[in-house]
Image 1 (cartoon, helix red, strand yellow):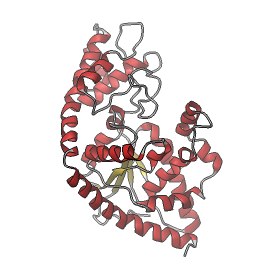
Image 2 (cartoon, one colour):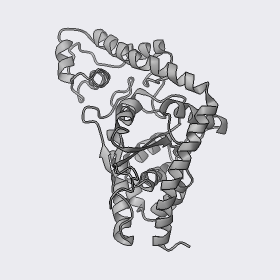
Image 3 (spheres, helix red, strand yellow):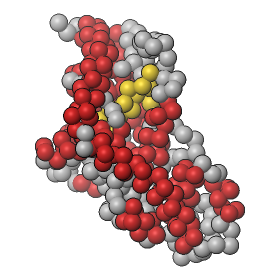
Image 4 (cartoon, one colour):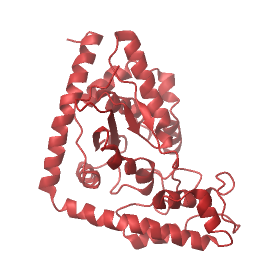
Length: 325
């Protein structure tokens, strides 16, 4: 089924969770840096996934503040109620075993334990599918770690279309081949995460640049000195090379040659400089936007109205096909 884009261009959607005071480097390199250029030849829907943030217990005032902070960082559109309504329909079409096999759910549930793991976390991938399918999205910018969730979205779209007739666009991932997963600085075998990384393992884009420099220079590497890209035997060094490559648009092989015969300290200093060069103006502009709350809330309201036009039409079609009055 073709996209419903009124602009005659393929449609792209991406959302960021407001589960922390700042987006981190992995968010930016894994997906967000694609958002601006994608607007040139796509009809773009970008937003804040505040419903997803409810899987982590957060005081209401903190969630509101984080939502505005995320909007200031993304200049994005707001959430609309059709998401939860489609989530229920799709949830009724998702097998328990299929949802249970989601890697991120299994990893987080193992760390949190059964008592701290809520149903929202279990059904999170289905809500993500609703987010995507509501907008008849052609492409979804995602990090490699989200590919499994997008495959679930594709499965649900195909299942619904087979059962009820052509309804949803079956979306494709839009993943930068040069950047897969950005790892935790302190535990480089795991990904950098807003909810699971330790304070020393995550580069928060709104932190004081001096703090992030200290974190990078304290990043875990290994007992050797040779700078090679080897994710199995040198995950920490490989992660630093990945970050530097992405921020400087330099191939990893070129960086390995450049640092031949040099130590880990030189590599960490180069990564720290590259992160600071990007994050400092980003941080300053975000805080400027936070001072303009009226304008920020106006952008959110206008974005929500536009999103509702598209999402509402999709939901009406879905409800009619499944027999809801």
